Length: 363
Length: 187
Image (tube, rainbow over the protein chains, first blue to last red):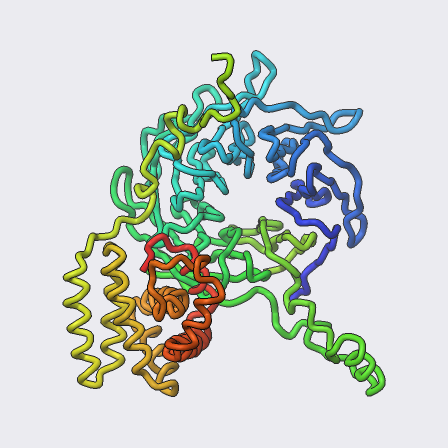
């Protein structure tokens, strides 16, 4: 078990983080700005700052191939940042929303990105060559509440979204002239824009915090505020799904999840540590935490003198300092991302959370 | 027109897609309506089990059929039934019973229902001894005196619920508490 690589960047919540393709640059959303860090040896040093938003930044995503950074914020705007000789150059995106933007993700093709918003719609944005401008098309129906999370299918056409109305939905975001016609999949064959390919609701109708397609795209997982994880296996277009597996957990709710392979999900949230879940269309179960419990430096109690102990008792009313959690993250984990992949499985993941830490874990 | 204060216009009412213009209940999971009479007859059946000494069967029966679709009266009837069962089980038997329910199929769901009733019971133990239609702020400190006078049972019911809560969290974890807060199907 390799020890996790912990980067404590600052004492502010990190709403979202993203690494560049070479993993040398780290972008984190910090209050109204996005901070760029550059790897220097084993550490990340502050390098640049993307300023422009005037409310809390809620999402940041670096496109792996083009290197463009997209950010979105509660000020209802999104910017696409491109490197130029004079620094990062922002381009405003026409989102046309009247509520905060909550999350943003590039499509794998990098020609589009989707923004979740409190305006009960999802702007799908693409570049209009003629006008030299990022424009958006809205996915509207049948969303009834704030979109909290979006995730792309590998074909860059299907988009999953989780909402505070308790539904996880799969939409088509096919834009003519931008996308190639997608291969038929269990989700659907003909996919004009805003086709609803699936709509799923938990028994409890709790808020959805995170959605993700499996690496093949043929399964969808979502986690809600009812401490549940649901995995949907679609069968064929317009047919009920082959299997919907929902497990209620004893833990606090998950905020973020990723698939590390077709049969394993890594999820983390209010428990401040990441968990492994394993299964298939026949069933899923929790397989344990990815933190090894016997990590040095946490469990070990230093030998202390009696004088020290009594002094602590006198000062603080207790001998040991128990204000630290036993987990690496000291507060809710809000984002998990893939850090390193090889041979179809994820080898390393990165997590960021409310405690201002970004941690790279080896699975 | 000049006097119209545009700041007070409810813009959501003018937006056809706004949540003000659709029935929010359409978002929640469908629950089958249950009449109070049905709840009552279920309660009688469960009481029979209870009289026969099968407390575990009674608890299981009560938790498998929560009347989500009932009106307030029906829900109150079922709450009384569940509280009665909980009070008739000895402290030493709590954990084994919960463990058996948990490992049965649909066990987490049943325990989530139990957690809902524990919280609902806690919210009502004070109100049980005072008339329910009295507004709490109207009685204020007076109601406390009243509960102490006639409501020795209130405190006892609370201690039973607290020990159930403790045992339940040991088995179902904090997840079940979160589900009580999240779930739109209320008991």
